[in-house]
Amino acid sequence: MQANYEFLDAVTSDLCFVARADTLEGLFAAAADALVSLMVADPERVRELEEQPLILEEPDLELLMLGFLNELVYLRDADQLLLRPKQLRIHREGSPRLEARLVGERFLPQRHQIATEVKAATAHGLRVAEGAGGWEARVTLDV
Amino acid sequence: MAAPPGLRPIGPATYELGADYRPGMRVPVRVFAGENLLAEMDEQVFVQAANVATLPGIVEASFCMPDAHWGYGFPIGGVAAVAVETGVISPGGIGFDINCGMRLLSTNLTWGKLKPRLPGLMDALAARVPAGVGSRSDVRISRDEFREVLVSGAVWAVRNGYGTGEDLEHTESGGCFTDADPERVSERAVERGFRQIGTLGSGNHYLEVQLLRPEGVHDAELARAFGLDIPEQVVVMFHCGSRGFGHQVATEYLQSFLRAMPKQFGLPIVDRELACAPFDSDQGQDYFAAMCCAANMAFANRQVILHRIREVFSDVFRRASEELEIRTVYDVSHNTAKIERHLVDGAERRLLVHRKGATRAFPPGHPELPAAYRGTGQPVIIGGSMETGSYLLVGVDGGKSSFFSTAHGSGRRMSRSRARKLVHGAELRDRMEKRGIAVRAASLRGLAEEAGLAYKDVEEVAEAAEVAGLSRRVARLVPVGNVKG
Image 1 (spheres, each protein chain N blue to C red):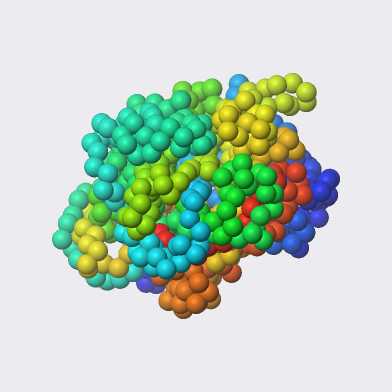
Image 2 (image 1 turned 60 degrees about the horizontal axis):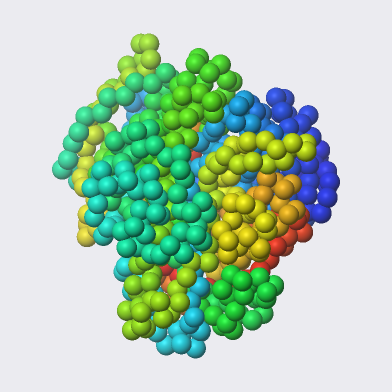
């Protein structure tokens, strides 16, 4: 199965997406793709000009997903950076720990078409689970 | 009808769902709505309001305002008061956009004077009030000065030349929540917000030029008391909050509460978005102090935007803004938690009142109202959809049944993605222009999401709020120009 995502009509005031992937790492990357597809109308035009490391540790996978997406929201709003994970590892011994190299570029109004302002990834209905078909995450964004 | 079978009418436009609806409820759910609004409410509104009813320390009821709709954690349009001694504070009961609110300005201009200059005015407003995703301000301040903003709110703005003392008097809490403590705010939150004072943002945030049509006046005497007494009078309404700063404060505390709830606080998690901390705990007090900082950022933000509006009107009409009598009618929040005194079972109690997508609406005579409005009651501003219109209401004695809270807007009836499927942004802009509403949108996609069909009928919301006794209609205001974030 390819990493992918789709937006649902599930929440009246906000935006909700489901991401799917074969692996947990692929799932986090798919969720990041979903988020970036909202932030900028033409995500394929985001070049790999900037990079920075990210390390996160949370009590469970759902809080790890929440922290991961909110880090991307923060970088977009505070530093104008549109970043996605290039290399991503999740260690699941003990508290889940994410190590990633984020790559992308600074938002340029002349190059990127702005889309939706994401205030935050929320914990509402948040789910990260492995099923027979692979990994699936459901995330609601406050926009 | 999506409403659950146990919902029963208990008064005019008032319904109750007993505390036995779901396990763990400490109080009933009380919904204020007309029949149509009730039928339109998502089923999840009732589930979420019932979840809110399980919060420790909640008093009287978990309330849903007439514009309530499904959000995350609390419904949007949700009100919950908790005892300060035994209750909890919940970021989800306030919203990510802390102190998102409305400001209404009156002018002495009429439609006849505005009409020929409307396109130029709208261009200038769109240029001077940064809107859209990640919009940044031309107010250049250091991170240290930003921390002064967090302490002083709109008072900082007026001290620095952005407005007048009267603006502060006509702002909820004088434009400053006094319990703010910047030490309780992270560097990251400061970094995210310090360049955003004076910006509108995006989503459902907007700046509208509106008209008071004679047929829109519901109570001429009150309208006059609020400075609205000229036929075809031009007014300005805008809607925005604490921008990325408030979002970051809410995000960080919500995540820290989620980590602490089961182990440290011993609190069960009904819905993760209802993460909370005992108000009387260090974490609860820290969040409250940080939330007040974000509220102050929002007050300062709206005060600076008001100043920019005065500058633009002055430039376009080539007259001093004082001559145009651009005055703040009122600035009121709809995403906060505040310590207030209310009567519960005949005894006065100190309560922490969460209002998420709900407006405080104090009645005539309330000691917290400024002298100008002590006799009238507090102005309440309800923003409608950009295609329809908005309302000015006033607080009334009957509001005691909801801890003096009322609606805040039309309330969404359709998701953003569904609205985008049904409406094309450019077509909507053209349609609005043909109907005489000048549109300046930072994003056509964002414009489509805010189409009138995505919202409940503001007439029904304002009427239900009046029938339920929460507030009274003063005037309806219709848009002629919209800057959309």
